[in-house]
Length: 475
Image (cartoon, rainbow, N blue to C red):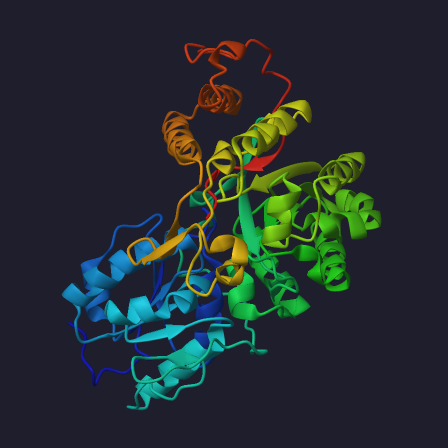
């Protein structure tokens, strides 16, 4: 049980909890800890992706801040909130991150004391300072409570070099798989938010088209610390690394000058790959192994509804540009939307196979169903109205149904195949054939594809798979 009179600056009085960050050592914890430590706090950390909930650590805390930067983390964090309340009803529980802001009303009703969205480090520091001084969370800038309706903090903040020593060691997290060898992978962000307003993405619902650069010295300091901890590869997890290409390239050049053998990957929009294609050869020389890009769909109608900023014809052009530079392209998809037809879905499968992308694609990408969280920009699209159901508070998304029931059944079947494949570490080629069979069955063309009884690929697999991270999940 926490003690209200205990100083929040005592070790363990402030507990930072990570739920899931795509297998990476959680930056949301390390970044918050860096700023808090500069002001005399000694936070402790708990990463539920690797560690069991420690009742003693929970009971000792006066302030517990749970990071929920993505949907999977949110669902785990909501369960964590219930357990924390049972173990330590007297502590202040704050949920922070992108999905905390979108689901603030539901989380406050579920027992959270406060919510922080947007640029979270400074509001979290202000909350800790106010509670340490004996005050209340109401009125703290950027902090939303049941008694206040503060908006997400979308403004520049003071950055500190992330503090990672309180987290499990780097070698326990996602690793780079390349050339048959696994190497520890670090994770940084050179920018926050995004310039673009893709309607299915949760970031515009919070940031509204704004983005902020993380100071170069902070990013390079974090890279240095992770290299010293064993990282041989760095993932740049910016929503779009090329929102600020000058800033991004300056960091890559400085990183390469100090660590010439360090490799990296990044995420960039299709339109940015094409706009900045002249940078790709230099990126390869600086160590870029692969680029992840949100293709989402190959249907021009779906892309227009999502306002992705690219058309179907742009996708092969981006693929050729990246490959010409000697970099692998890893596309991501949202293949199940209310507007995706069965033929659209099969078109994605044909494209992936024809372009030799099966080994570049985590099978989960072929199962993803459109999420519509509170505040989603899709809620304003007229195309959404005929499909939208009620908000599911347990899943933190609006329900929707496809006009073709076969598509909803196919999504469930593909999800089942992908989950089983992940459990059994199945070859992605074989999983792809199972998915293709399921799609053909939905179109009543089962005799045209490889049967499910297939147990081994009928082609050599010793050519080497393209570089990837060991964590295949996505959101």
